[in-house]
Length: 207
Image (cartoon, rainbow, N blue to C red):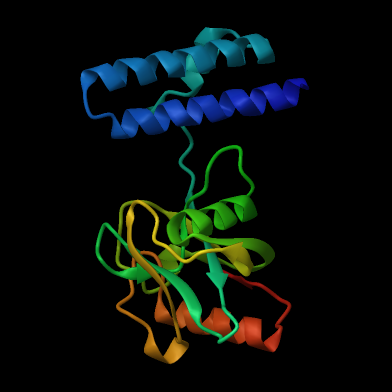
């Protein structure tokens, strides 16, 4: 394993520990995730030959440079030109599958994994449809600044079934969409993607 590969694994461990700290339910969980975070910093210090004090100061949340969060989603059509969607457990509304980008995974890997986890359908990513700045589209307001990456994905197998945190999964025609979870997807975006896929438009949308 190269030093770069080792560092990527350490970054993944650090990201897992920080995610755990966000969602820790009790002091026991928090203590374990803090320990995991410290281990990752120690490993990073050793691998990168950087003093641990420097890393601790650099990664203090209040000193981090603010960056956009990244939401990755997959657009899938079946042979009837129906759109694959999942019903969100959080709000009971529908979206195309997706979620936050993960450290250590490429964007297309995230899209493919989220599709299978949320709907049971296995796919392959074939192209990028667009990169959206969420703030300039008609999504409801929220505290985070978010970029949204959308990939066209093709079905290669699997069986339609909702994931553990989804209420349902189904295919819908564009003219009979369910109530959309507009924090995640807009009807105008679905129409854009459908048109791009059916027309074989080659240029992805941006901004």
